[in-house]
Length: 248
Length: 364
Image 1: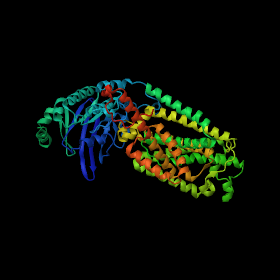
Image 2 (image 1 turned 30 degrees about the vertical axis):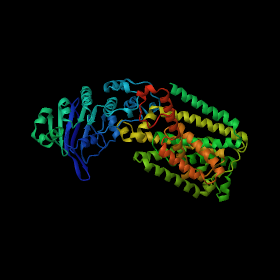
Image 3 (image 1 turned 90 degrees about the vertical axis):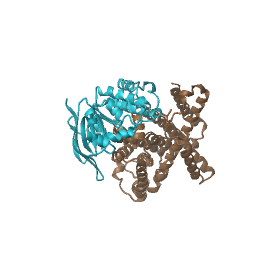
Image 4 (image 1 turned 60 degrees about the horizontal axis):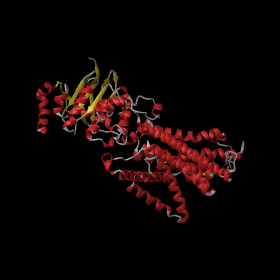
């Protein structure tokens, strides 16, 4: 398998605080990679750097051979990287289908955007079915529940047709049923996409993760499959132990 | 579907009122007044697009209104002066040769094109500089207002080039017509009403298009839009330019309708008054913006005729009332009433009509 995303020597400094302190990370084509780590480990910052929201102090992020550092956010999306946010942001005034349609339409030339949408495109219809919101397609996104919003965001991500998907805590705040549904969704998406997921939820991780990278204080602590990572004493010390107490 | 039909019905009704009833009923003086309000309504339509749909609080639309108005005024002045002649105010100011930037405006085609193209070009330039730097919200509002103030200072200061405080006035010939004649006033009224109607339909199409949906998305979550692969700066710049073009066209129509364009018509206060009118009419609907501009200007005239000086207080009070009680303006109140009535008519189906948090509706 070939590397899709290659991060080398990445450093991010906020007002003297080293949020990311020399991270190297390689994600292969077709991989489903979980990023875990305690609060402040630099997980979201890492995704922010990949998607152009945060500029690194040093290092490089190469995506399919293209350097991403220095590109604007929308240019990076156009290269084929999509992301969701911890707090889902959907456009509440627009209907579910309009949200998806906008996500699917960014490759259209400007002149084509001036035309009215007629019906529902195949891409949007497929995304609607995948996320199970077909019945709510015409409702404004503002009426959706928290879980449905997260799915809509994932649907928008799929509709973008990206090569790499970055999901920032997709199951945070979800009910048990919703988590399960999201897990299935994730498995489904991972079949034909490269996905990086940030997640805190250990139960979710055990069920759906294969490859895991543990971040700690801005560096990569351990990398490997779920079992190996869980067994690692360093991980238990910085993260898993504490998390088990939290969960109890 | 019935929603759509009702929209067309309302539009037809308003068109009938403006194009048939008003010219039959109103005395010439009042019809001319209405033509003036319709000019403001065109500017308001642009504000509705930029602010209501796009979230750009533009407090300086007077600049674009002025650019369009002056372009038209310059042509009329040169036409009155005849070939090689100088506009009257230049002679009074001791200017001896026609300034270079005036020369192209002797040509009616150039002048008419400039009416739209100059405001659009200025807005494109400003938008590119400002929106790319992610200047927005109150900062953009202040910037646009400062622009209006600076524009007035420039116009007033260059007496010999612009007519100073008096502006451009005393036109004797408007495209072959006597500006004082009733027939001229009447045809100017029709032209203005038609332009407003066409621009409204165009703007409505824009709002319903993917671009329009994108514009609303930019208004509600500019940063999120970037991660959908769009550059919000481009969307905003284009919309701002369209609203500027509308204001320019309105300014150009205003000149033959009213017979003057001067700095006092396009400074900070007139620009603000239109934004207030749009807010009162309902900024989230294009029709609300138009309605606000017509009603507020009508009320201003009527009220000022009865109680000179009291208008400012009434306007302020209205604005505060609307902002606190009905932030969606008159159209918002109308929509609420309509929905409430519809709900009362069929109460058992309440399941689906449960209070839906709708901040805005697509203008009908």
